[in-house]
Image 1: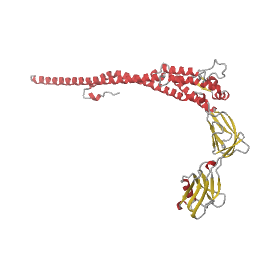
Image 2 (image 1 turned 90 degrees about the horizontal axis):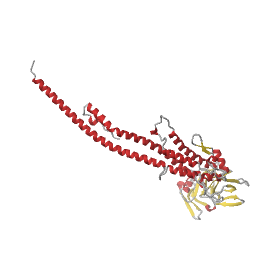
Image 3 (image 1 turned 180 degrees about the vertical axis):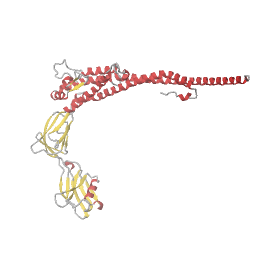
Image 4 (image 1 turned 30 degrees about the vertical axis):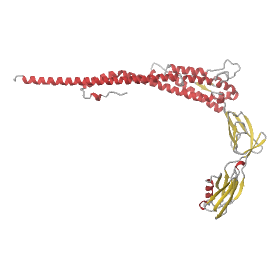
Length: 460
C-alpha cells in the first residue's frame, strides 16, 4: 500500500515533524491491522490452493482405475521379439496363447548391378534408366555426365520421386574393390512388384548392367495349421485385436508362442500412483493439524472445517466394501493389500495386490469399479473428490471463493482508508504549517518589542 512521505513536511520544525509522524502513524494503525489480516488470509489461501491442487491431481488419475475397461490392460509377449513383436487392443483382444510359424517375410523387389572398381570416379556415360513401376507405368530417369558415377546415379534415382531407391554398396567378396548399385522398390509384397530397369548409356568408361534381380514377395506364416500370405510384415487380422510385426523367421517346425495376458505390472503402476496421490492429501492435512501451544494458527489450516471434511469424505469413500456379501471373496481394499497404517496414510502391498490380480481379477474389478448393482471404491472416491474440489461447489472451492472475497473486501477497505489518511495528513500538514507561521510571527513580534523597549531605557 502507498505510504505518506515525510518529505511533505521537511520544511517544518523538528517538533512539528515529530508530531506529524506520530499522528499519521496513529491514523494508519487500522490500515496496518487490515494488512495483517489480509496476510493471514492469503496464507490460508495458499495452503488451500496447495491442497486443492493435490486433490485435482488425484482426480486426474482416478479414471485410470475407475472402470472395468480402464482396469483391463493387456500385454503382448512372444518367445522371441527378434522374430515377432506386437501389441493388443484391450477393447477387442482376448487373453490367450497363439502359436505361429514365420516362413517368409514380405520383401521389396530389388536388383544388384555388376561391380565397378570405385563409386565416385569411373563413369558409365550419359543416358537413361527405364523401368515399369508397380502401377504398370513406364518410368524414365535421365543421367547426365555430371552424375554418371555410381554415387551420381544413386543420387539422381533417389531424387526422382519414381518409387525406386538406390544405394552404393561395397562388395568385399573378391580381392579387388567391387562397388555395386543396389536398387530397391518402395513398399513390400507382391502388390509392390516392379519390372526392373534397363540401362541405356553411351560414352562411358565402363558398362553398367544388372547381374541379379529379386521379385517382391509376400509374408508367409503358418497359423492354426493354415499357411497364410500377407502383403505386409504388419498383420492386423490374424489374431482379433492384435497387431503382429514380423521381424524374422522361425526355425522349421518350431512355432513361436504369442501370449496375450492381463498386464499386471501396468495395473499395479496405476494403483500405486493413486495411492501415492491419496497419501499426499492425507499427509498434507495431518501436517496442518499438528499443533501445540507454540503453533501460529494464523499460518496453518489446523482445525479448519474444509480440510476436516475433505479428510472425512475421502476416508469414508475408501472404506466402501462388500463385507455383507457372502458371495464375494474380495470384500475391501484390505484384501487387495491397501489399508490404513498407524500414520493415518495408506500402505500398499504390491505383492499382495499382484497375487490377487492374477488369481481373482474379475472380483478386483468389481470392488474397484463396481458393477450394475453396487458402487465400487473408485467411483465412491471420485464422488468424494468432486464434493471436495469442483467448480460447481466443492468445499475447498467454496472456501477459496470466500477467502478471496474477503481479500477483495479488505483491499477495498484499505484503499478507502488510505485516501482518508491522505486527506487528514494533508489537513494536519496545513494546520502545522499555519501554526509554525503563527509561531514565527509571534517570535518576530517579541524580538521587535524587546528591541524597542531596550532602546527606550535610560542610559546608566
